[in-house]
Length: 165
Image (cartoon, rainbow, N blue to C red; front, side):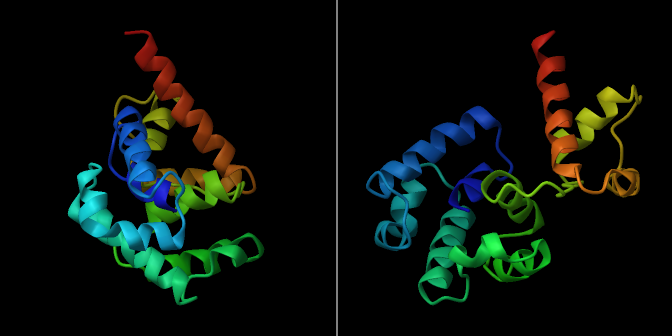
């Protein structure tokens, strides 16, 4: 979850650098205690915005108090995880979707709000303009069960397109 928070609204290279600093600020290992011990000021010094640092500390507090039970997420439905995690200030649908896909390995997450997914879909399908969230949501209905994989291919289409420049 900490990684997903770090990557919100950032280019991958910048987010990777900042996330490494967050890990360092947490003493080399991100745990509930290390995030709480680091606190928002130390996390901000790692390059996080005030909002992201606060979200990380709030997530750690929720986890410490068992309002968010990270150990159970693997056995919970996507909807249950989303409901539990979005109760944390600063964590919304995109962050939760990235967590479901990249940490929990869920195969049917469809992040229609992700610009990379929308751009990649548009590239693959030769669209003149970037597909809207609503239209992508509708198109995704036929892809049930493998939408996370399709999202990955959309991201790869963007990377491939950029490498041609």
